Amino acid sequence: MDLSVVSKLKARKTELSLPWDEMQRLESFLGETFGIEQPPTGYDSLERIRETCGNRIGEQFDQINENRAEILSWELPISLEDEQFAEREQKRFYDLISSDPLLGLVYSAKWSYIFDTAAYLTALIRIVGIDGPFIDIGCHAGYHALWLAKELGLKGIGVDRSKAAVRYARETAKRLGLTQAEISFDSRTITDRVPDGGYSLVYSSDGPMDVTKDSLGKVSKILANDGLFVCIGHLFESVEYMRDALSNAGMSLLLADVVGGWDSAERNFDGNPVFVIARGKAPEVSDDLEIEISTVWETGFADYCNTDGRAISEKVVSKYRSWRRYGPCPS
Image 1 (tube, rainbow, N blue to C red):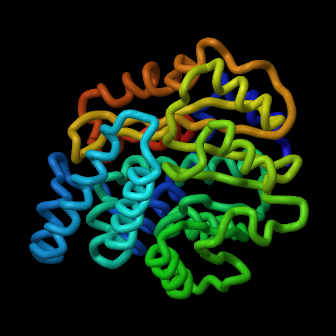
Image 2: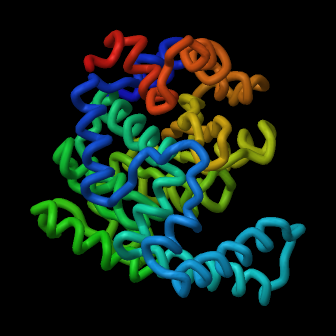
Image 3: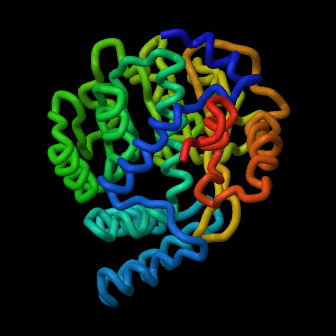
């Protein structure tokens, strides 16, 4: 595994791309396995849930979502009672959507993020030469972990607090012909049964691990000496705080990037930061971190999306990277 190539990608981010045939396999995998498909513009997941799953499930979903939105508006710090309520609502949400067809209807609203994250992880694994094992922290239904196990043959573990999500992921693994030796799912803590030498890849996509001192401290205990931690979807408090958190954990930021694209439900573009982190010391986090994150997004990707005739289905960062490297997608 060669971590030196990661830092070099700062100036060549479009190399983090997949051939078009693999991109098409990924899109088919998400749709056929989980029902996660790119939605039409103006997609209303609640309306689709009511039409498909009935009003009772629709009302239940809507109420939990309202509670989650209220929680996000709370000013920090919050009381222990409020913290416990927030955890219960999160668990209720993920337990509720861990069934078909509800899971696909809900996650189709996040298709660009889920698809782009899977493509990014796959390209990074190929470039660096990661051969496992990996752990997906906050895996939910296992869409990313199962893709990596099926497509790349990597052995790994998915961890999630929702037992309903874990059951769903296990059942899906069986349907895909994957054994527990190849991929397993659990609600355990991330420090249980860590493989000898640690994990070659630790990642958390919109999950519980972020770039705070607490999270980086926990990740450092399970990451292999030459492993990578990829944190996706979390904002950072400040450059100074990130520097301090990384230094405290004995880790360094190798690459800051972005995933995402056109959000059909919200009718706008939604970008999510990516931080690729390793053990050891590297040059300090740049004061221009936000610029580094948005390099691809605000330059080439914007021009690509604004090209006349560009289909909405093509307006995700991973497809832009593939277009730059491999040319237009064959019809």
